[in-house]
Length: 245
Figure (cartoon, rainbow, N blue to C red):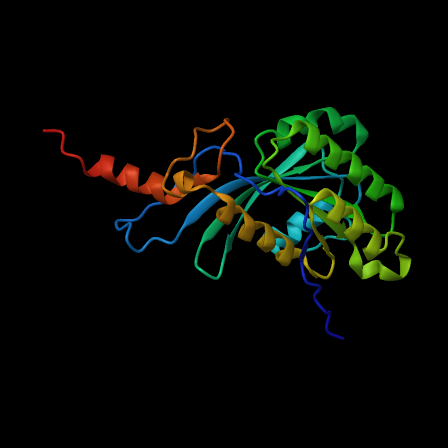
């Protein structure tokens, strides 16, 4: 039986959670012609949530299209990258920090979501307590992360719907109240995984201000927009072509 994909939903709110993203360290891109370049952006993304909700499995599915039934819990944090190309040929590179969910690592979380452009907060649809933990993470992000951070609430393990404890209605209502993006996914089957990251990617370039799209991104570590890789490449090319005589 073919798995039916669920559309990604973005919940409205009085004020948007998707303002200008933060900057992060510079990436690289090389081309001899800027006229034919597609728009390219680089963003920092962090995954948060209780242990065993499937954060690492989501990232593994997104980055390598793989699933491991016996994947061990993350220790500290893991770092991966993946690129998404949108319909208009805009390229979004995610620098992904997959954080550990165990309580003993909670104090380390701020160093990973600091200066993050977006966060995926994951819960397990078969465990009501995991949604409560997700709410705690979201409140922390709302208090301590930059107000412009894009937050997506992700209900994982949709393949286990027979054991569901968290209804779609409950999660959607909460997402609507908090102005979050929301979707359910299955890291095991792949349902909704690419869609949630693509939906985030579609938001981020659109929220970057004209100064960022023109190369006005701030240096790494400061608040601002994502890195515009086109402008960096053009500047580097200009410096390389400059005459030193």
